Image (cartoon, rainbow, N blue to C red; front, side, top):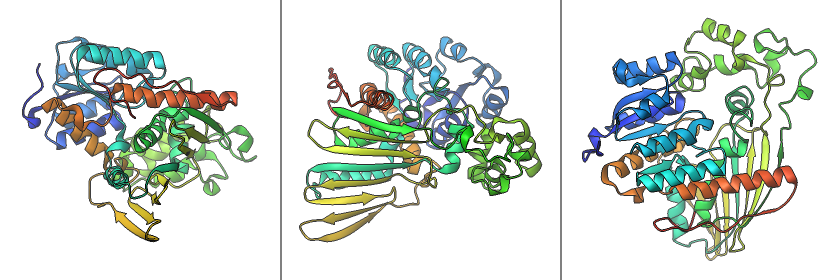
Length: 434
């Protein structure tokens, strides 16, 4: 099946019909694509997905291999399955000639990333990892300001990812990404977005990296003496910042929060349904009585070949809001918060403010990554339609370079050392910069 010339007739199959897969499918459909097939191991999830997009039973699969080994059912495939599945599915999809939009992380180790790259380059298909922060209107505005050299040469950067206290509890203490052996380290599963973004802003790949961080709070030692293992029976639940009852009941009546995070717990959007789900669901567990082991705070320090430096902080202990960044240059500096950039010009000693239009889709931090999800889908669909991959701001090797920084940072954190990175490999047709 050749990619359609008409953007409104591009067909898309989805592997993994959970929150991310469904979100990409809805965005693609809203932009004119046809959703033609789905694979998901969970009967309720794939049934709901199939009903929404009007899929006949023969295009609904409980095994991904069955979808990918049949005749091609679409021009492109979105892979938003569990992280450990990415490599096998991406390799098989590219060998079948599908264009691929792959949810981050690309894979859990370098060997699997290399397998994906080899398959993509051999097949010559359109491929992108979902580094959505690159595509936000905010990032586009920031990059344009930097390109004017208003602040001169970048010397150092501070970047903060405020995960959000309840998001940490939902996803990284109770949820699917709580354990390294089941998904990966926090820096890979959550923050490969940010290290990729820093490299893109700096237009350099780091030469050296160090890192510190740990699981500081969500441990049995922090559990109140009178707390029980489940929030629905806990006598101190009302005074706990991480109460599952408080979090999930507060979602009721809010369509955005009923979609996420509540749908991860239950599709019964009544008080009784939520409480019943929390009685037995892993999402009803006390945050101090889970089997989690990923860090809840981490700092990464980067030195680039140019001599510039950057620091990245990931922390659970914040509201869930946009990333915060300070960039310090030789002629000025700027601060950004995902919506507004304030630039101070050293020559004039004046501060100017630039603001993103917040009317675009997915403007909030919790819904669509500040518009990045919509813009990424649009770029991917355009690339598949036209064959013009210049609208995609990173390729497979760029994604690998960012992941290599993550693995180096984890090595530095666990060994207490400074880790040097090899210069990135440049091949024909790939960009030399991040």
